[in-house]
Length: 313
Image 1 (spheres, rainbow, N blue to C red):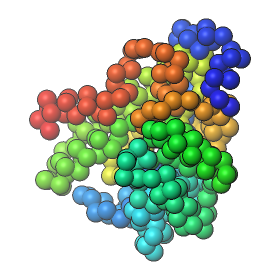
Image 2 (cartoon, rainbow, N blue to C red; image 1 turned 60 degrees about the vertical axis):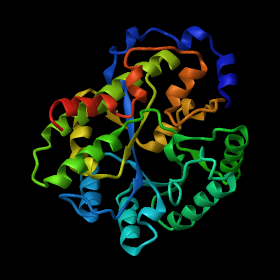
Image 3 (tube, helix red, strand yellow; image 1 turned 90 degrees about the vertical axis):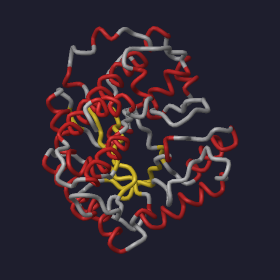
Image 4 (spheres, one colour; image 1 turned 45 degrees about the vertical axis):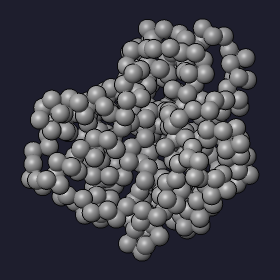
């Protein structure tokens, strides 16, 4: 359903409702966990690829969470060892989706629409043999095309191949803090990184609260949020803490499939834009200007990195 069609069936006041009811029913807020760019065979401090993969799966199991892994096949799944890591997700009951072969940027002039689509089909040939396989595609960098030809060509392609656009509503910059974590541990594997852990958890909380508030402004309700994280060291170490924090916040976990069944994920924002969450894209279409916490949603973790620098990292 086009966003314009959705808007025609509802008054503007529904979308820009004040957030006065935000805390009224904390139990109403749900979140689905999705992990991009996995698995990978990159060597990192402290944990091997197998240990990282197992740590994330154990954290999800400990909290009773059914998640989704979006596979970038060239990172590992084309190799027996990496394929086994991806298979472990399906074996554990998690969904497995498509995140291309090599993570190209659809907005790049060097990447044609045909090349991008081939990346998806080639990845599909690999992951379709995995347990948990779903016809879900997660756009790389969340970029859906910076020209009408690329945007509309991809939408037709996904429809033709029965693929769901695996939207993200709750975007994070975990990758940026992961870079800092790897940098610090690369210099000293025994370094005290508790300050990075605190910054990471605060980052996830801030993003969650800001996107929840945005859902009330745009939808007048709590939507099931779809969280974007990555298959990396920071989540291998602290995914358990992230999940525990959501519980402490009063949020409950849902499955990606259940979240995607919500009507909000049927919308198709009619906008050429850089990578962003579905909610942020909708807000910009509707002319939503600045809002509390909004500037932090697009800073790629700059705020947290600057704070860490002030603390000597």
